[in-house]
Amino acid sequence: MNPDRVTTFADLTAAATVGPGNRPVALDRLPAEFGSAPTGADPGPALLAAAAAYTVARRATGHTLPANELPDPPPVAAETRSLPSPRYLGAFRQLFRQRAGIVNELLVEALSRLGERGYRLPPALLPALLDRAIFDRTLREHLAPVLGEAGHHLVALNPAWVPVTPPEQAADPAVWEYGTPSQRVAYLTALRSRDPGAARDLLQADFDTHGTEERARLLGALATGLGPADEAFLESVLDGGSTTVADVARELLAGLPDSAFVGRLLARARVAITYTPTSFLRRQPGSVTITEITADTEEDRQRLARDGLKPARGSDPAGQQVRRLLGWIPPAAWPALGYTATDLVRADWGAAMTGTGPQRAPLARAALRYRDATVAAALLEAEAPTEGLADLVPSAVLLRRWDIRLAGSRPTSVLSMIPKQWDDEFAVGMLRFLDQLVRAPNGRHSPLVTQLAHTGQTRFPIGEAATYAAALRRIAAVDTHSAAVLLDTATTLELRVALLKELP
Image 1 (cartoon, one colour):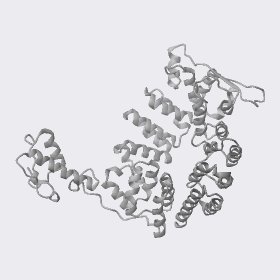
Image 2 (cartoon, one colour; image 1 turned 90 degrees about the horizontal axis):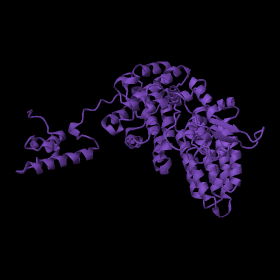
Image 3 (cartoon, one colour; image 1 turned 60 degrees about the vertical axis):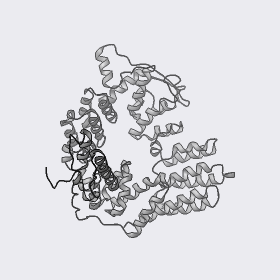
Image 4 (cartoon, one colour; image 1 turned 180 degrees about the horizontal axis):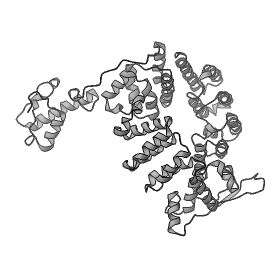
């Protein structure tokens, strides 16, 4: 036995597992900072006391291992990014004092700008941000570029922060060979953005060596740079036997409007869906009936299953098939069957499928995939809110619908028609609506004003944010019921302006 070797927590665990009589442990060789060694005739209590001391040390340091068992940290390289001004850092610290629900959104905006301008954050600010980034992937991605060398040094000291991967590490070819599944996905995604063909060839070369879950995740990376050259590989995946992986391939093939897969779907939709207009001019919604796609031979059944249209067991087999067709077929392709995707949104589906508006969710997925503004507007008009639809619709169209909704009996229905990205036209319209709402008697629209104001804290365009903040303060002076939340939004906008101005 090495007389200089320090007794570790692993030694104590091994002795406790098999008994100190079977696995002697040198309690007189504990780290010096633990004080004198536990004493007593019975080695059991002494062993527990030593383990307790180690546990306290581990919790106090915040590491999996106590200090004497940690590997030597890597040396800190010279910083290549400069720090922003002290005034900027002061404003940045104020972000943490904003309303809890929006702090991460504000941080993402600030970190994105810092990264784009080539700055880093000082080490003192990083632990709190790294802790937040563990549970927020978007924040993690924007934090990595501004960590600086000291930040990456900190990440190496705490295993909980490992998911924050430096961009240069994500581009290292060794990651594909030795990295974690998440790192391989990041590497493949980055390579797709530079060279889609090389990334596809790399994945295809050892696709079968990965497990089912990892294959599905890696295949999803082909969404970056997706093009017709990917079709042959994706078609081959449909024969791989894994439903999970094949479903990812089908989602990608559906993103290729001229693919053979989409052609097969349209041929089957001709059988499965019958649309009947109410008039030649289609001024009123038509009606829809559906028919199950059946297979007469084993070969036909295999073809249906290959395209994801084999009905699962249940009471609505035709509905299951139609939902998939609606979600996969490009909205622009439906006129080949004599009607449009908008016709399907507005149609009376009666009892064709179970659920309320059962056609709208899959059609929303198709609208988002192909960024179809017409179908998105029809879905919002039908009050089928899906995140992202409002961003596809021009601001002028949204604002006209807002005028109608706010004048009606259900003004809160406008909450389903708020885009994530506001242009100046929508921002000006939002200020007009807020002014109308606060002038209602007895503050009856105060809850709606609160929701809209909170949403605007992170969505008003930053370029004219100072102007919008001043307008919010004028609106706040009209109604005491909503004054506090409007002033809070104005303050947040002014903080965003201050952060922007301090970055040259």
